[in-house]
Length: 81
Image (cartoon, rainbow, N blue to C red; front, top):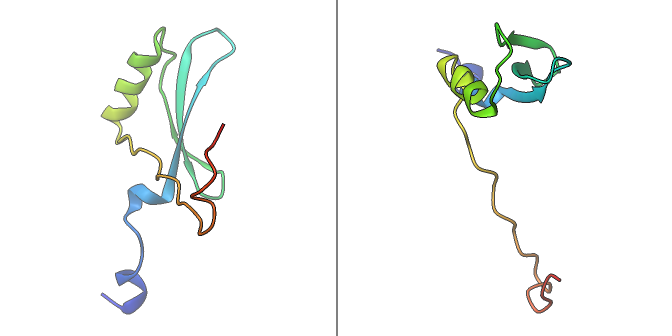
């Protein structure tokens, strides 16, 4: 393994999962590359969002929560309304 391979992030972090309501009012998913290209998509339309998530999990989707907000110096004294 050379140095460039050692610093690459895991493959899962180089994709974006998109969940959307399709034209027929069902749910579908797509796995996108960071450049926007479609890598994979759901083979069918799901009636329920939860079933769509389960189908995506079967193809490698793993939920990752967003990062917490970082308080900037000087802003900790002001509450958010």
